[in-house]
Length: 574
Ligand SMILES: Cc1cc2nc3c(=O)[nH]c(=O)nc-3n(C[C@H](O)[C@H](O)[C@H](O)COP(=O)(O)OP(=O)(O)OC[C@H]3O[C@@H](n4cnc5c(N)ncnc54)[C@H](O)[C@@H]3O)c2cc1C
Image 1 (cartoon, rainbow, N blue to C red):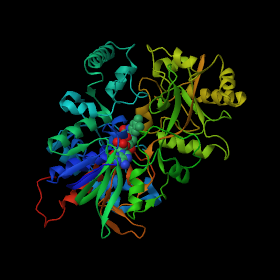
Image 2 (image 1 turned 120 degrees about the vertical axis):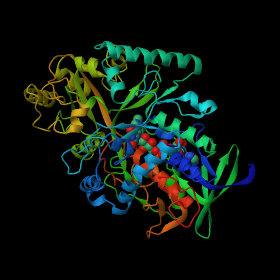
Image 3 (image 1 turned 135 degrees about the horizontal axis):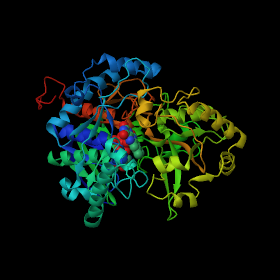
Image 4 (image 1 turned 45 degrees about the vertical axis):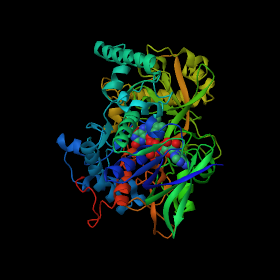
């Protein structure tokens, strides 16, 4: 094994997703010499596959749009939703820093945002719930701006893109869903698609970045502008400690190793433990066929490194993972994939049922809630699974899992067995292995009320969040329509996750804490390596990336001494 000469820097960042790159860019802007060590050959982690939404209440874009609120309002909302998992110090640190984080990036870096001005929080009936303005997304980005670095940008996730083309929630997605019904939608999609085909021909990939890919692209550009040393194929293997303080790490380098000494410490941002089977089995409920959609390299290294340095893992959260219902896909070439069901569950004319044919939740609520309800409803010892049931007409209109709406043919997914088909509801139940009488009863009962736009069993359409997921043209309730005319379609969904919530215990400065609650000098964690500030709850879309960006920013400023009036750093930052 070759051992290269040691390298010195001020801050070493482990991992190149939102948390790591936020820390790296912030620290470099404050004058620190920064190295980002990424285990994979490409940068971006799960962030590059994500929807890219960041929950950041009180952000400057909302203020500019006239949405002005006091920090007490989102704080009250979080206090109510998080209950016993509400951590006053960390929530305050987050609410205080999130608007400054957003202002810092938009004032000083290539990261520019668009505001989610109409995106409501999940639990609209809870006091303090926001009706819009608390979310941000990176503005679309032209990957040409990255120069040669584009080759190091993680390619999009096959399952959630169309031929590698990323589609953004909001008007972009609406155009794709209405391509056969509206001339302006057709024009938009034609433009996007022809540009994408040209990019594929010339560059071998889509160059019009959106969602998480735009976030990573803009952060990489900012890091490069500020002289951050971005190292791919450089896994952090172990931490260096001197007198109890973390002073760097040993990185893999080709067939050897290199020691990196980091004067101000190390930020762990290695993406949590969604692919660490042992830790998952210790912390996840009923983890048999769990299908995470996080990148395969998120194997829990950050948590292990933190523990080796004396850090404690907090496994006491309301849920250890950021759940979403996922279906297993077999592609025509025989390979398999994992599809996260984010969109179609909320549309009018689809229900979720268990093996006994019963519904078990408001299908249009959050993805995390759908899986929590499934975990609660399935009797112990049984496989945790549910089926999304709809008509063919629904599938052609809104899509069903990875089977896209018209004009994309659904035939290949029927032939592969991904979509189950029945002429009648009872036929469909038998094909799926659902109790036929139970399903017939459920659909008849649901339809009776749905014809009037009502859902007395679970109240679909009762919150702003539900209605945004629905279809405004479906009256009287955008979230409810009967399932009447066959053939009928179903897809099986099982518990999956976007990533993990359990992680290293940290304080409001993102410092890793030991079992006694004392900070370990020189060791920070951000993103999914730190125990989620949301305590295992999912109060809004974007609650992974908003805190990841914010605690990355907090960690870097702490390491740079930017909050310390006695230290001479670039204090002009917000
Ligand atoms: C389809 C999808 C949609 C999503 N949409 C959203 C959304 O809109 N909003 C939201 O808030 N969340 C969303 N999420 C979840 C969110 O993407 C993740 O929680 C978030 O990206 C995690 O960021 P991170 O910085 O902690 O880790 P990552 O982005 O996963 O980055 C971690 C990096 O660390 C690297 N690494 C691992 N081990 C080592 C090591 N030993 N040394 C060096 N590097 C290492 C990994 O290779 C990886 O590149 C979504 C997830 C998916 C899959």
